[in-house]
Image 1 (tube, helix red, strand yellow):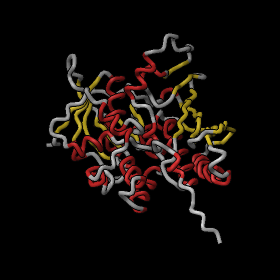
Image 2: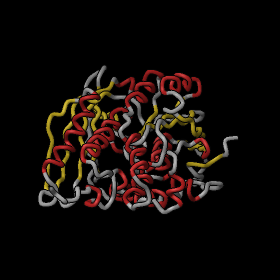
Image 3: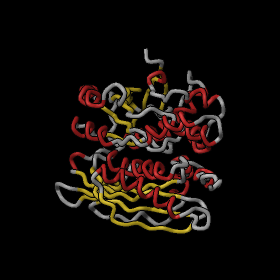
Length: 352
């Protein structure tokens, strides 16, 4: 009878999930340091300049390619679940652009001396099951030896150019809609630090494995044009990218922001990931008046496989909300005119 303890994947990672990303400020610094102009072509419809979820390349009048990649360190210990989360997260970038994923490539970094190949097989199985459900073909991949395991996918999709969702199309008056509650970064950090148990992890996993496909389809069907998915930069970070790209500002109603049960208590117990803290540190453009420290952390919590953030014209709101239901979409604020000069991008109201 073996007494060997199961290997914990999270023990091999310094960060967890999308919380291991470089911060938005760090990424801006790196891109600003580039001296060579970004190569481009006339067919490029979306490039890195707007910090959108994927690149888009027009192939013809009726079709464009959507290209993205996403990978990260283990966020859970179960290998198949990690694979499922990673695939759901990678596919989300295509859905966030209004596209349909068609092919994917695996990206693998694996410590050959420390973790068995059967564990990697389980990771790949988990991802493959999600791709199959999405109708997305796995056509290959690439692997390297690395002391820290990492897994993700490069995904290619297609979209009709007139149905493209981008992060630069928010207009004053649009209502902001989020399709998943916040807090998976807090929950997974709490589990890793021994502050929470299996029930907390299960809540996080349920949301991380919930695909954004239906939310994207509802947005496209309603005629929405502005969307992004909320991942490693947190709600405030990704909303800020939308506002900068759109030349707008926003008012959020803190009480209307959906938060997974138990998350605020875990923040107060110290379950704040490094990535979430970096997000919070990069909020000079936010007026936090009236917001508690706990809520500020939640609003900046680094999400993995988070929901879609939609900017919805008020007259289209019923068409978006109805198919998603009260537990699948929450209205949490409004896009407003940008203020002058150094005016904050994001302010908060009590919703009254």
